[in-house]
Length: 319
Image (tube, rainbow, N blue to C red):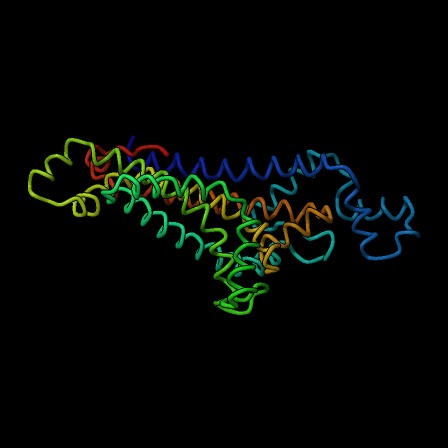
């Protein structure tokens, strides 16, 4: 498969992922019990005086009186132009709400991603450098334990220890760089465990390949073998995990921003689901799917950089 065909295929797959996410979200939200238009009108006061005519008038204004396939086609066309609709509860454009909520979420998410990759890589390397069987077993067991910890429990534990007990970091809100530490660590712990598991096993396998014996024959120590040769050969499975990490960070943002009372995508998603604000939920799903598709596309493009054999054969491996 040539590079051009590979890129075209990956771009088409990314478009398909975003379209599928939009379609599934549209269908699922329309199946929810309750009337979003009635909820919208009741949220603006005067629920007791609402009449069926009031609700019907509002549905006509919003286009909810049209057949579902027409609503879907109109919403899909608008989304393709970057118009994600208007919030039923606030009356604000959804695109603007998401744009305002993205910076704090990106700050925590990117910090957590950096921490997860750094800590996970370090743990995997140390597990393969350890000479003591007990130390090696401990380092290999930590990721399995950490990945099973619920995010909300980790967040509450960090608040109790590092905020209430030792008073090192603020527990709530978005008050500056220090307020990012606890939510980022909460998201990073399971991510680091996942990276350590995948990279550790891949590195262990890579060190048993024939090339490792050749490197040892040159007199290289274990540290040089692991850091200079093993990591690069073991990196592809770990790079693939980055795409999964992005998905988990997006999902974890809802929990973390609730626990730490931070503004962001998670908070507006929670509020929109509670109020059955369909356009906001759908917009958040589309943006999350777009981010996931873009990150996985970038991951695919990194493969040839890590493995020269992919470039030399003119073929690219799939994720």
